[in-house]
Image 1 (cartoon, one colour):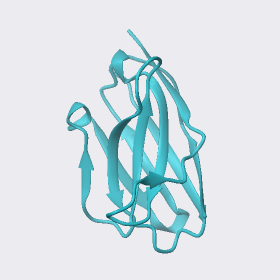
Image 2: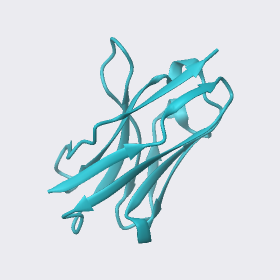
Image 3: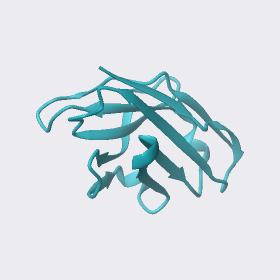
Image 4: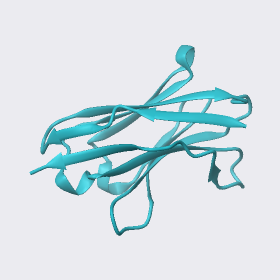
Length: 119
């Protein structure tokens, strides 16, 4: 089982930046991908970005391309989400989760971190 803990959320003005962190512990060996998702009040959870646990290829939702960057610090077993050019519509609880294989869904969700962007 993989345990995930998100941090780095907060209140920021539109146009500002935040860096979220997702610290992984436990049985991380064999993890296929780690992803970031978000859920705004009254809306369904949506995909934001993901990367292979071993590094390399990343993919992003269209609404964050060019603004958000996912990266990983191997030594710290931590995946980051650098968010620049934040917009009020980015306000949501952000979660990270792992995917065990290309055929499985994301699981092992963290507790989430709140991001609020004021206009």
